[in-house]
Structure formats: C-alpha cells, structure tokens
Image (spheres, rainbow, N blue to C red):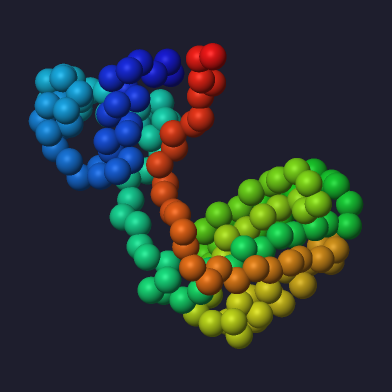
Length: 156
C-alpha cells in the first residue's frame, strides 16, 4: 500500500491515541470523518495497522528483562522451532532475530527475579540448541513508544 501524506498524518494521530473520533482526526488532517474512516479501514485491511490495543505499564506488573540468546549453530529448523516456542511464551512480549554476537533478543516480563530464573530454566536452559543466554534487568525506562516513525534522509 502506498501511503500518502493524509495516511501518514492519520497514522501519527492513531499511534498516539486510537480512541479519537473520525471527525476529530478529520479536523486535524483536513478530511471528512467518512474519508478518515475509509482510510483507517484500508490501513487495517492492508496490514499497515496490525492491531488496536490498550497498553499497560510494565513496571506495575513486575520486572522487565532483556534477554540475548545464542545458538550452538545457525540452523533454519532450530530457529523456526525457537520462534514458535517464543510466540507461545506469554512472558515474552517481543522476540527479534538479530545480527551481531547473539541470534535473538527477547523482552521478557516476570513478577520477580526468581520467577524469571524459573522461566529461563524452563524455556531456555532446557533447549539443547541454545549455547548461552545473557540477561539484563530493566531498572527504569527512559523512553517507550509503540509509534513507528522511520527516520528519513534529510535534504542536504
């Protein structure tokens, strides 16, 4: 889907607050409410908008852990199995295949360090394909957003 300036403006607004009315959005971007509704439907149908959700404050639900995972060897079947397992893990909110020293990076939530340790033993240490995993505890959050606003080349 090719996004025009109206679509991009609408996306900026709904990424901040998707409960705003079509009329309110339309006033801001200079479109009718029905045009905003049609565009939002098209953005959802095309997969540009993948979900409409409520965000919760992770710090009020326990601790957040950033976990880096390395495998013994690179193998598509092993990676596929790991991806499926992480999709099924409710404690994992994000899972990324990455370049560099590790193969995957996870964002994991647990009620306590002990709960995370138990999760790690069950979900990671029990997997014989994993060489090692490294964990960082999130002490505080400087920035968090679900907004996607890609950096663009600046005119020079």
